[in-house]
Image 1 (spheres, helix red, strand yellow):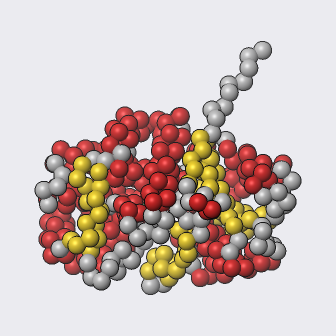
Image 2 (tube, rainbow, N blue to C red; image 1 turned 180 degrees about the horizontal axis):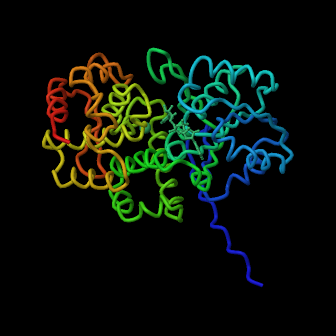
Image 3 (tube, helix red, strand yellow; image 1 turned 90 degrees about the vertical axis):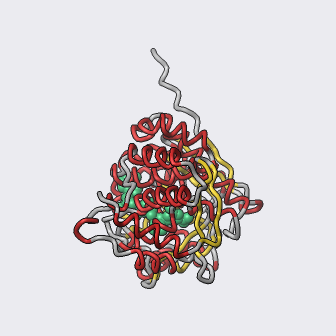
Length: 382
Ligand SMILES: NC(=O)c1ccc[n+]([C@@H]2O[C@H](COP(=O)([O-])OP(=O)(O)OC[C@H]3O[C@@H](n4cnc5c(N)ncnc54)[C@H](O)[C@@H]3O)[C@@H](O)[C@H]2O)c1
Ligand SMILES: [Zn+2]
């Protein structure tokens, strides 16, 4: 009889935040260990799983089965998928359901889903009874490498994205790389932009590795676990240095000042997913860095080439509907950037590149220079 192939051991990344420290457990199949890990952390706990409709069809039953196996009672709270749930109404629905499920101070909320569910359930946990702990089970690539780590939770206001929220760190993150198999290819690619971001902002070796291995990450080979773990380590290290974003944590915004403006200019619609906006934004940040004489043109080319190879948009003209609906002019994009919460007293803060693997925070960028740069990019022929 042949022995079954030994499953590769999960990778654990520690988020070193003193008494708020927690583990991120990464591996193919780790969802099955959700119950035993929670039981070890919180014997006798009750739980409620918050998820969205799409994720529920694929992964709610396996998650519930894992809890049942460890004898952990749970309730399900299912919201509509998409950004429309990260609202006052979505928060009311989840909060009332948590109260009805009698989730108390020592119980746990489990966020099973992408960044929307993580932000929403995390925020509901932060305010329920003045704070109940929560576990992140991120199911999108973006959530596994970015939103589930670092403790930012919240909802949108009709006046802007993520304007209401709290820092609330999870007590455990379970990132099962197999759940990404059911993610749409476009969502997967969008999440990949954040993976590439970690290479660009601080790890040239990782970026080079991604150039060679990105196909295996998509296919779901062992490169996927390595990519998720390396990304989580990078984010965890930055968050541990600067939990509340008073300094270095801003490096994580590489590509995001431009990207957010593009998302807003396309109405946060399906024209441009967040990660796609970040991809175009990282190219713009690289090009702008080159224009300021900080980054060699050959590095800009490498950034464009890799993101395009990963199937991501890299230029403004690649944004869906650019020819028909456009994305506004340079002034309207500047106005959108000025609304970003990263703006402090009118000064634009940009994350720029000095090299692949070396990003810097530029706090005092001349807005007229950015405007002229965008104007030229908008005129580029597709
Ligand atoms: N808290 C943070 O630090 C942080 C960081 C980055 C982004 N965010 C937030 O995250 C959100 C974006 O996250 P997202 O891209 O994961 O969006 P999302 O949660 O809307 O998920 C994208 C889509 O994929 C589906 N999906 C998720 N996992 C799936 C799976 N395994 N199989 C099939 N379908 C699946 C969802 O139902 C949804 O339709 C935004 O609201 C953004 O503001 C937060
Ligand atoms: Zn992002």
